[in-house]
Length: 212
Image 1 (tube, rainbow, N blue to C red):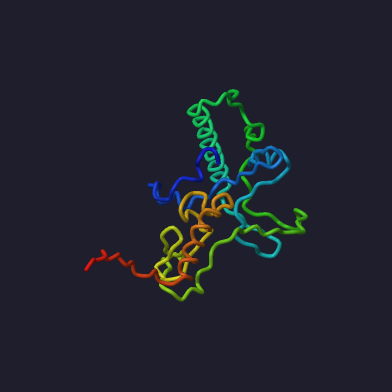
Image 2 (cartoon, one colour):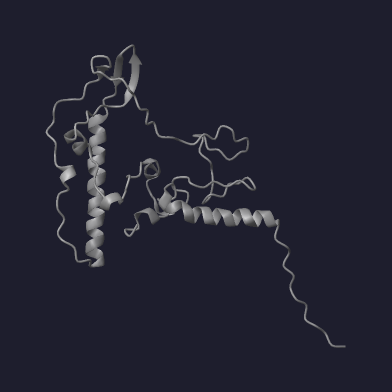
């Protein structure tokens, strides 16, 4: 991206918590448009907390919805501020910033329910969107950290011939995204190619010729 946010190297991050924060989902489809919690409510979506359990037809939800909305609003404000600062710094002629219609405040309709009855709400279909995470339990080499992630230096592990790519923050903020994986993959491919060639030959220094 032109802002350079996803090119931030991992070595420049001072707060370890930054490595665990989710990346904002960005798309330029159809010119780009904002999808916010507020707009979802206006579109008729009923927001709930995380599903924590089910018993019969009763579904239980967690209390984190207000915190999630606050986090999303703060992240959006931080991103807009970064864009405005870049426009000013680069001297780009741009109209003054305005309010995105999708982020207009939405009147509070009370706290989200902690339980719902699926039959009473006529819920007939459930789509599980759980995300994903790496499963490294099958690795039988000493490269795993206590949390299961692979210890590496820019994708190179301490075990000969073992490399990783596509990891978040492999070398920079964009490493775990389609935007940044290509550069990491090309670099890792070079390491693999060098391994295939075997150990580098010894460097022979030329001996000065003698005249007898």
